[in-house]
Image 1 (cartoon, helix red, strand yellow):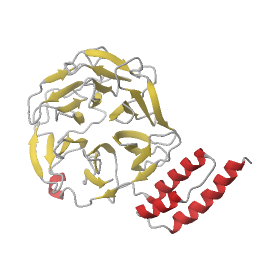
Image 2: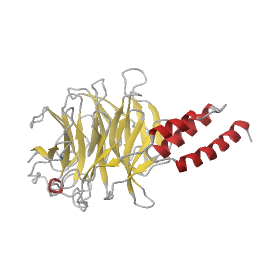
Image 3: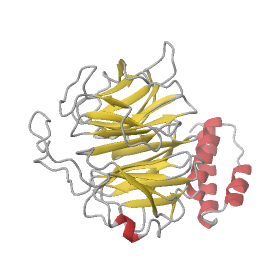
Length: 363
C-alpha cells in the first residue's frame, strides 16, 4: 500500500474517534482537530478536512415556529420562494390549482385557459415574525412555477400553463417585460415549453431554464432579446432550478430527472456557456438549488426510498453530500432561497397535503 494512503487510513481512524467524542456544533473543536492534521499528502489533508467539517458543522437548524400556522393555512400549493434586498420573503403559491394529469393536453397546452387564479398568488412575509406584509398577483397567473428576485429587486415569475416569463418592477404589479406567447408552447427563440426558473449573473443576461418539455437554458438580454441556448447537448431532463455561483462565475442548473447539478460559465467571453463543473452520482431527483459561498444547498427526493430532504455540498470534486430535514418532514420540496447575508434558508413544499408548506432554517 502506498505510504501516503497508509497514513491517510490511520489518520481517518484517529479523526473518526475524535469526532465521535466531540460536541456536534463545536467550532472550537473543529479548529482543534484541523490543527492536528499533518500529512505528506495534500489529498489526504483535503479529505480529512472535509470529514471533520461534515461531522462537526451543522447543516441547517429549523425555526419550527416560522411562519405562524394562520399564514400557511391560507396558502395553496407553494411552488417557489425568493428573498429581496430587504430580507422580505416572497412566496409563490397556486391557490386552489393543483397540477395533475388533466392540466395539459398531449401537446402541453393548458386546458383551463379561462380560469386564472383569482386570489393573490404572491404573498410577502416578514422575515422575523412570518406575518404577511403584502399580497398581490390575483387574476394574473394560471400555473405559476418559479420565482426569482434580482439584484435590483425586480420580481421574475415563470408560469408553466402560460409558457411565459414575467418581470415586475420593485413593488409593482404590472409586468414590464413578458417573454413567450400566452398558452403557446414552443422551442424557438420566442417561445417556451413550461419554463421553470430564472437566474441573472452580473452580466445582466437572463438565464431561463426551459423546462418540462424543452431541454435547454435559454439566454436573453435584459431587454428580452434571445441570445443563445445553453446545455442543448448535455441531455437535460427537466431543468428545474437555477442559481448563480459568484465564486466561480457560473450558472448551475438542477437537472432533476438526471439527478445531477451542472454548472456553466456565465461570464462574457469565449468560454460562455461551457460546462465547468458538476455534482453527479450522489443525489436524488434535484428540485431546487441555491449557492452560498463555496456551498451548494438543494432539495431532493431519493428515488429508491421516496425520502425527501435538503442537502449541502461543497463545489469541489469528491465533496461529501450532507442532508437535513425539518421536524415536519418534506413531502415534495420544490424550491428554496437564501437571505442576502447567507445565514437563513427558506424552503417550500408544493404538495397540497403538506400543511406546513413553508420552512425557515439557520445555516
